[in-house]
Image 1: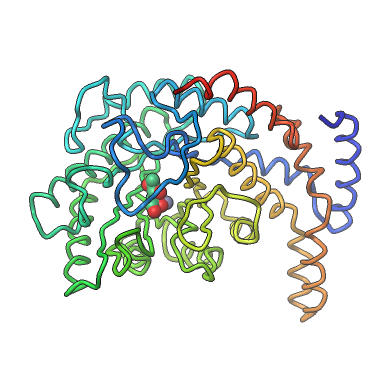
Image 2 (image 1 turned 60 degrees about the vertical axis):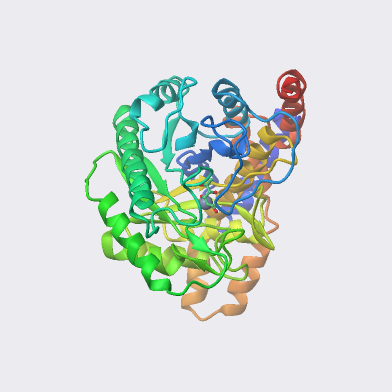
Length: 419
Ligand code: RNT
Ligand code: ZN
């Protein structure tokens, strides 16, 4: 590791450079401490869960790779999450899917799940200073098929309505227990491989299902609805498209989840933030990285994530935007994948917080567009890395690449021993 004195002097130099542009580095560091991610539990075990071990992943999503060391039990998953968070600065949350319940070896169908199945999670989270978020699970189940909440078959549709209602109740209990609202994300894969005979019919059904699901008002949980472009095997039609959920959310006051992999690749997800902030209560993010398609690659510090973070900071919306992660890569060390993605996302926010917004705004107001462009370019090479190092040092997590051997060590001692 670079010596503390080197980190310190680089930080002092950076502080001066930023101060010359009117940026208070220490304020940016203080703001960084307010950023909390909701880590997705499903990166640790390739979206398998603890319900029916070994069951196939369905619902149009896919994990590639078979790197050794997948978490196979609740204990393994908890240990991995703890390990990952020890390399990520700040205090964060954990997002659970319903299939990750503590079912104690019993078969608990999706329409039977109860808050008690998450009691041990709530206690564990409390002990480990993590808050929980939640997700209903419509995929990887015999009744999943191509249609769940939009299924014309009442029996199947009601099964999923019951499931989702129960998930809201579980979220409410989690929120109450942790004295902090639990964000519940609702994503269903409903769609069709070929163009359906009638698109409206399924959307009407989905709207009806949602209305029924949301009938009960809760105080300790918040509903988020996640749209998608398409799923594998469901390419021609997605019932819960962005149009559908955006309008549902705007009309009924629900939070829209923006998954960065769920749009055409040239669409700017960052551009959506300011519009959503005007017309919906809050925003939930699923930070992911699409490569050619919704491939859920590990997040890296690229323009997409930088733009997104910048928009949130420029809108001063940190208190209205919930930052969840959603990627799954089984080709590399899974704990390492958490750390890479979270640290990359944090770096994007730090860069955004170090932006000389007043000066950029001034140039714009004065019509000085060359100056605005030039400054935006120069910002890219300012010494933000020195501030990042200081942030890690203050947060007592490994600085720079020094977390790599730590992850290797954990692999050697723990994950590589899982067969
Ligand atoms: C799928 C959605 C959804 C899932 C998780 C597992 O495309 O992004 O959020 O990734 O629920
Ligand atoms: Zn998602």
